[in-house]
Image 1 (tube, one colour):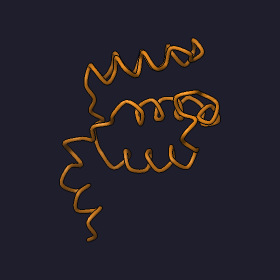
Image 2 (cartoon, one colour; image 1 turned 45 degrees about the vertical axis):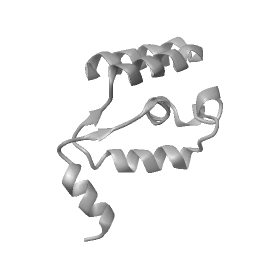
Image 3 (cartoon, helix red, strand yellow; image 1 turned 135 degrees about the horizontal axis):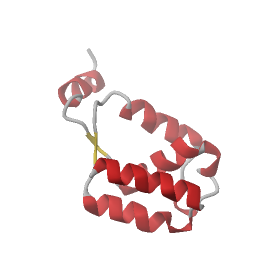
Length: 96
């Protein structure tokens, strides 16, 4: 068992804490990967970054965040089209 597998095994059921930028990347990528390169807040990422983060997240049974992170994601998503923003807010409500 390598180090990565040990860490994942130790925290798999406890969950993974995702901070603002990666959570925003996750939301946008889930909605439409091609938007990653066009949205101002995620332009520094590429689709492979989204895929890598998703491949790590899938090992955990829970995604953990905080009200402050969700507020920041909401504020940073201010320029998103309404359909995606609605999707983000639904996830926000489910995570509270």
